[in-house]
Length: 268
Image (cartoon, rainbow, N blue to C red; front, side):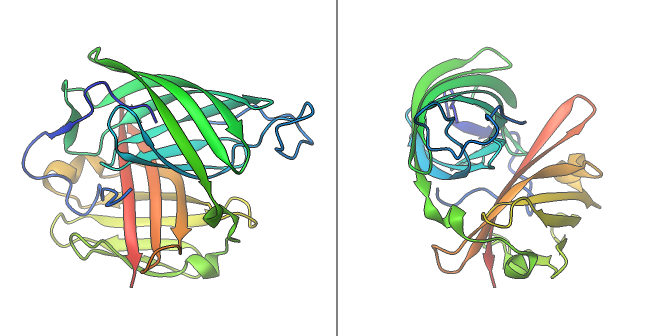
């Protein structure tokens, strides 16, 4: 969502989280008045749920927003940066505070791995979000910009564990994630050593958004920082492309550090 003042990322070293921080190749809770349907007019509050797509003015990169009906969001930028936060909606006005995280193995241009930001926006439910953004890294680099997003009707696809089940492959390293019919998640990367175990569950069967949680074990090298870190977030199943793919964003805390993982995996 916001998007950095000097938006380029730099690697911490030449080996970047192989098999873990899968970057996008393209591309909290909220206050919603009970009993409203998200139309945004006549005193109702626009419901922010959706898959939202667009680009931010600072980096010029694509942004994909995964937002549930309550307004919890994960915004995924085209280079794997993830923005996570909450929304407050009043009529067609939307505000939010959020945290921004780089993938494991990368830093923002000023050397930060984290920053905080805010946005103010006008929302037309299931149509558009037009936002002004502010962001500052932990080392003080700041930016302001705009973010214009359009609702993607893929959000209206019903969700089920049967629909989600199958094998999904990371095109960059051929690591396979297996999703069981009961929502179990498993993968093993022979290069990094990482073994992923977790689960997916439904948020609202009417919409194409899933809760996901998992952790890694046996990672070696740079990715070893992820071992044992409980990662939680959301995923969507995008059948507007061939092959169909899972797109997910998760974060997890270990000590005083929050780690971010973005996944984009093709059904195989």
